Amino acid sequence: MLKLLSKHHDLWLQMLNNLGCEHHTSKDIVQDMYIRMHTLVKDESKIMYGNDVNRYYIWKTLKNLYFSKLSKDKKYGFYELYDTDDVEQCDYNTDEDSSFSFLMDKIDSITKDWTVYDKRLFELYFLRGMSLRKISKGTSIGLTSIHGSILGYKKILKDNLSEDLMDYFNEDYDKIL
Image 1 (cartoon, rainbow, N blue to C red):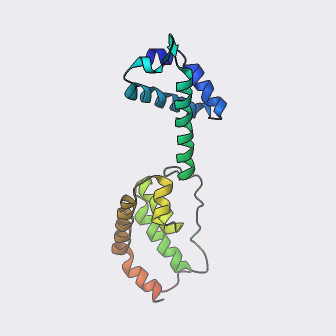
Image 2 (image 1 turned 30 degrees about the vertical axis):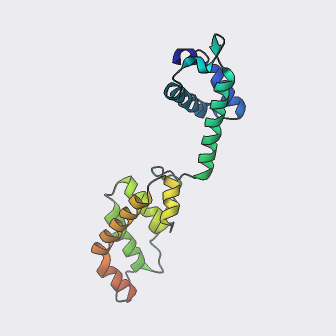
């Protein structure tokens, strides 16, 4: 059956392009259609029209797969977890509060050896102030996984910065000039 379907590969791509699908996405959807036909259609005669593949049946399948993908993409917005080009670098070395700058330098030294994944989650939650649910929805990472990671980050920060934070909140520090 796959040989019969693959004969019209360019036609399936063109059908998706006519629906407004981008070329690289249409290739993925056609591959999904091949998989779906291979797993779900046990009797080849069900998708045949004479001696050729029933193009209407394939078109309906491609259309359903494409609109299903559009629906999923619209429902879930994605944040690139590993692409940090859009991250605005914060300047913590302000003259007004050098103690805060000192704390941020300590946080940077703690997080410098973390993986890109951990750094990005840390940045989204602590520095950008995004909720766990919003991060989960945007990155497609499970809420419990993100929650566990954030708890781990909090513990690391608490272990390493608790004394410095207490001094900062009590204003029991000398400002570095």
